[in-house]
Image (cartoon, rainbow, N blue to C red; front, side, top):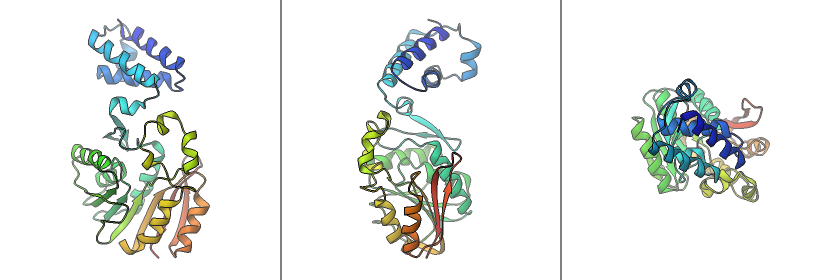
Length: 276
């Protein structure tokens, strides 16, 4: 079978399955199977596909048609220009979190000590360690499975953060220049309304922020000050409609210069503040 013919089949199958980005996903899966880029697919639609590659591609398309996330099929995702491993044990890093990471980089200086709570795949912490010099990074997560993914990503990208299986601050020692977190912040009642790719295939514990979505922010507001240097900073990802509540929460605890920053789409995305 020819590349173009098989690709058209993949697009049609995904479209019939209700995949909104059926063209993009079909192309990305073909690139993954052939280990070629989009330029090759456009330039050589009449290139022959081996039987093994055709079989693999068809299997991947059927997986995607069952709403298995694309990144779980390929096992990787690009984030901040770096390739990270992902699997169902961690949240898939998204563009929204790239914006958060860019804001973190504005607050972190070479040689800083950085704590990443709920590190998951390690995408934020490892990106910071990749783009700043001599960062002493510590990442915590309550999931040992997630920490294995973070450790794999650290190794593949040549970084050496300390990774702790810890319920938030439970096993953390010392003080930090910056504490960052993308904690669970979806309201419990809202989870069933999320896309199938999220609610059925990503870890529930990394999504559920409690009844009002603010459970983990309360922990951070209550305890972070004791783990921050005098002029230490906090940077958190937040939900699009949580800015006012989170700002008030941290101000009530005495943190200074509490700011809510909107992302490129105009949605509330980041909370920043200084130690109290």
